[in-house]
Image (cartoon, rainbow, N blue to C red; front, side):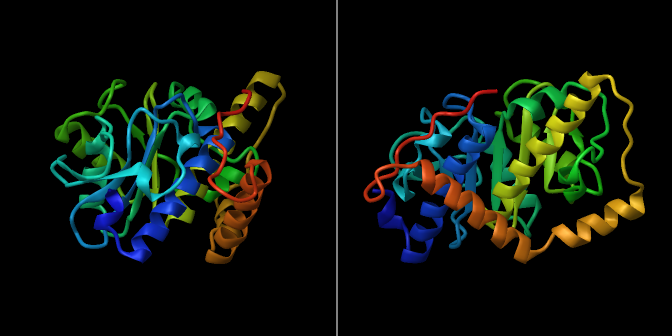
Length: 254
């Protein structure tokens, strides 16, 4: 079992990562069995990655993850790792500040990735990203090679998210909570300009000074804690039974 390779602390963190998978499914990031999250292994063995062939909303606990080395060898856990493991290995190697990496296909973010638009704040959510979101143009197909993973990591740079042209998004964070919220906020931020463009109504966005001020007000550990708590309670309200393993979450209407 994968838990034979885990401390109690790591097991608890992977249980939380499974919760993050279900929250992301609840908030529009589910795409059948596609999409994956990872957590840097605290002992330097590589990273714990969502196993394949299971949807984000079906993840229950630490047993649903596999341990993968930075060169793609699976060394613990039941099931198999996703073929896009280089996304995780190359970002984690390049960014020492990052401990959690996610790649998903949320609908509005995918649609926005096909445009030439610059993500500006129609509503509050885009103000979480005042430095803009970079775009990876290396391929619209799967990122299955180390070379492509390195190119994606280079495109990400110092940011916490990168669009993948006509494909999806990769996002990350120092903590599980932060990475999860980045993904949720980005999907909401992408939906707003698509909606307002479809409306045909003229619109405008705050200037850079106002955006910077809004970012300073909402990008904080306190806000992360409050937001994670909210989504955790929302998830708990739709999962049943109240005791025992959580009920799978199978997406939401578009």
